[in-house]
Length: 201
Ligand code: VGL
Ligand code: ZN
Image (cartoon, rainbow, N blue to C red; front, side, top):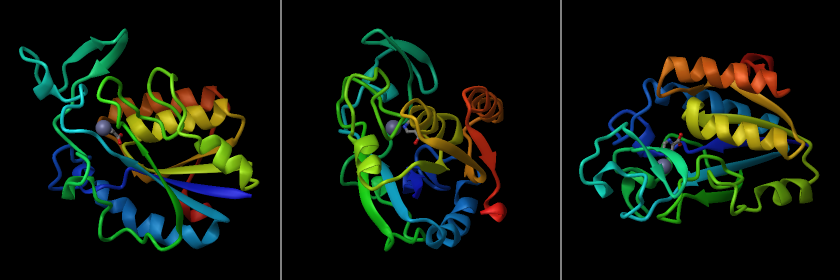
């Protein structure tokens, strides 16, 4: 069974949002078109309390995109984004949601960031996404969404570690930085992941 994971296709990561990923909206027609080709479609939703410590505004003396140590982990400081219940946290209205069987929320603990749909950044707590997928008989996981160099990358890395055959749909994601995108792809390939284009699916 093949699952498509739609990572964080939320207004704050799209043009006009507080942490807009360049050209992020270009992926939406692609992922809408891809959905019927899969046995299962799941979405993740970045879902932060307003005092989340990944927000630069929570750290006097730091600015957006600084890197700090937060509870022992390296943490990039972000603009406020995807605050629970706000329009920025909503899925794009252009995203077809009617085939999405489950939504996994992440980033709810203010003390730790959570890029992957499977675990927080310290691998302290699971979202149970792996168990959910296994329970549905999924063996192949395809990842798409935003941002390629953060949440899509970390989700793909955990999918590999969980033993799923993992495919990174290269044209159905966009990155915050192009160097980050290249690093992410090289790392996934080195770990046994595969890069695919949506046209081949
Ligand atoms: C993300 C930074 C902070 C993402 C989420 O979805 O890639 N990036 N929170
Ligand atoms: Zn976030």
